[in-house]
Amino acid sequence: MSSHDSSAPRFRRPAPLYASVAEAIPGEPDPATSSDLAHDSARALLDGVFHSSDAEVVERVVALAAEDGLTDLAALWSGAPATSLPGALWRLYVLHTWSQTSGDDMARRYRAGSRTVPGLRYLSGFAEPPDVDQVHRSMDEILRGAFTGDLGLALRRAGAVAMIVAHGTAHLADEDADDDRTLQAERLLSTGEDLTAAGRQAEAGQLD
Image 1 (cartoon, helix red, strand yellow):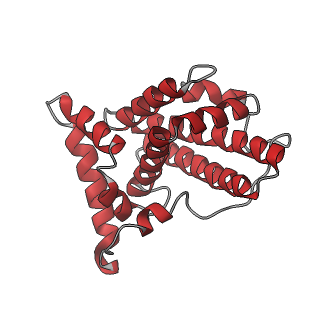
Image 2: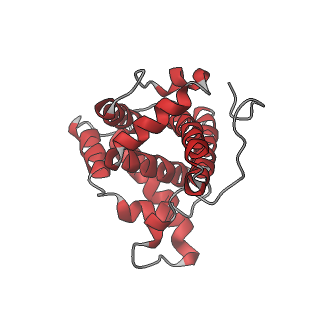
Image 3: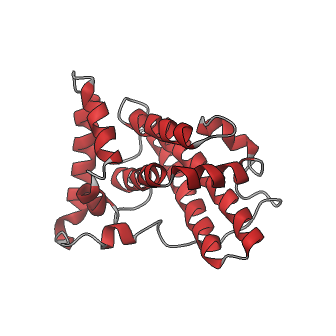
């Protein structure tokens, strides 16, 4: 079911998800070179992992993400367009970080949203209903997939997760009359659509 289906909650277009993560990091790259740095660093990381003969390299990148070890790179990527390689990796990184720090919250929101957009459940690859451990494993698998040759699928899976969680967040906001959750739902939906669009561009060989 499309996120624009008439039976689904409708959201406004928000600011990027959790931009405060980048703002909390001191220092700012030179605006004249930040775009090139973002694209070059994202491509170097992706290519370096994909072409490595060491199977442990991917696991080290996943571990770095889980331990917030990619924060400086993510801050550089955060200003890139959504449908660019650094912009897509930024959104994937933030979604993965949230899943690791608040897996129980993500699982709850996912369960609340999965019945609204059932067609996305198969793409996400989450067990039904997911628990915290399953959320951690699945998001690690999605991040790992981005670096092992199927970036497009990984981004589309992450997009599906974000959109399901967005709908769940909207349901919970309605139950609690929580305006903060409504804003979170809008941001998550936007992030999910951005990841989905980037995944399609990656599959077409057009994500730079």
